[in-house]
Amino acid sequence: MPQEAKVIVNPASRNGQTGKVWPSLSEKMKASGFMHQWEMTYGPGDGRRIAREAVRQGFDRIVAVGGDGTVNEVINGLIENDCSINPDLVFGVLSMGTGCDFIKSVGIPGSVDNAIGHLVCNRVERVDVGKARFVGHDGQITERYFLNIADLGLGAETVDRVNHTTKVFGGFVSFLWGTLVSLLHYRNKVAEITIDDGEPIKSSLTLCAIANGTHFGGGMNIAPQAKLNDGLFDVVLCHGFSKSEIIVNLKRLYGGTHLSHPKVRYWQAAKLKVSSPEKLLLELDGEQPGVAEVEFSILPAALNLCVPAECSIATLNPCILEKDRTVIGERSQISAAGVPIE
Image (tube, rainbow, N blue to C red; front, side, top):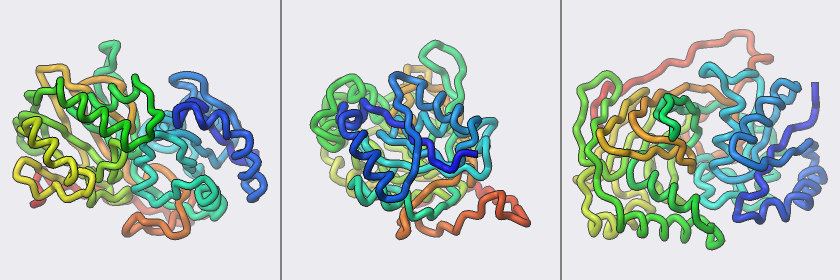
């Protein structure tokens, strides 16, 4: 079995800068003691394919180098039939993207040197993974996993716009610009949301975030109470906002103080469904793969994640890999039964 890690690099990330700096970055990783083989992606689906091949080749540590979209592709190559293909496999992230939102949920350093250090420290925690079943752009029902946040509405339209324009100005400016431009064209969507097995909730949907992590959209703290290991989504629904109300409350979105707004509702849930008679775009970890109707479910403790020695995820317990276990307990799933948390 390979003793080195497999590193999957998206050279187009960070507006093409990753491909330019990768050779020197790889040498830094080796000098720090992180031995690895690497392979670059060159188009959609490559991250998933390379990750799947690496698992079959016997690699038990796989690292994604790129943005949140690269992370999403790679984890979709590591999980099959709602569980990790190799229960002992450890996933790591070296963030080189535009938004770099996932690392904010974990406390993974943004600076390259410090980020390499977290990969070397070998602290591993077990985290939840989200699953979405939705309508792809080809009209077919599709399933895809996500690690950070899914959303529908204005956020998804912003992601679609940002992904089709330059990201040379970085995450904050790119997504703020994308939000403001998308806002000029956006109108609230008629939607119906079913939390767990509760009664359907009708909404004039501005944005609905289904959060495993805390941040999206280049730094918006959309789900400040979310935890990656509690077996639940944090569901944040912004409904009935006018354009001016969105602009006025952007500061609250970035600061994570919006949950008390009267037009914001918040639940915790193990599963939910969102449907609409209109075209309602879906975003998963910075990618825009399809539209509603969408069914979401949480996969508790589905992935082993390499985290910093001083991890910022509250209540995480040390991960015990399958090869070290003598007793394996079932992790319980907690459901809020569709009751909003005020």
